[in-house]
Each structure stands twice: as structure tokens, then as C-alpha cells.
Length: 134
Image 1 (cartoon, rainbow, N blue to C red):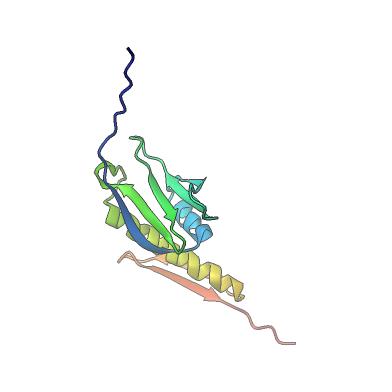
Image 2 (spheres, helix red, strand yellow):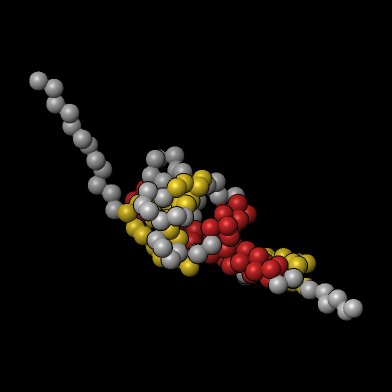
């Protein structure tokens, strides 16, 4: 007689709401923060891809599309990043906001001329647009 046993870890996935709605800006933010990630097709019927951050312990972090925004899905007991999850989200959110501002401003003809990180951790972005007179 041959018995197969299925062993599962009791893990508790946490889903954290974000305001990340644009995959391109989210990817740019992760790239600027040098957070290695991969695009992965979602398993449900939604047409958007998810972003996965691999961890060496096998418990990956995922930005999963819920139909409205990308939620951070993580098993908190296996968090393996260099900072707490709250700090991680804050860093990504700050970089994402900068990417949105620059990207959407460029659509209106503005160009970034200065990007500065301030001592208090905030960022300053200076944009300009030239008016052409005929």
C-alpha cells in the first residue's frame, strides 16, 4: 500500500490595499528602487498582469490586480525584505507618485528638469513647458 501525504504550511496571506492603478508606473517605481520583479499573467479572468517579487524563502510578494488597483499580497510571517512592510509600501508609493506626476505631465507637454530627494525623505520634481508662439 502506498500513501501520499500532502503537507501544507499554515500561512496567513495579507492583502494590503494600495492606490497603484497603472502597471507601467508601478514597474518604473520598482525599477528605480532596484526591486527585482517579474510580470506574471493573473490566474483569474482579469486582463491585467501581476507583478511578483521573488524571495529566497519561496514566499513571494505579489502586486495583484483586483479589478481596480494593485493590492500587495504577502505572507507577513515570511517577509524577507530589508525594511518593514509599511516602509516598503511607503517607498514604493512615493516613487510611484513621482512616476505618475512626471508621466502624466509629459502627456501635457511638460518635461522634468530637476528631481531632488530632500533631507526629510520627500522628493521635489521641477517640470517645465515651453510655449511656442507662431
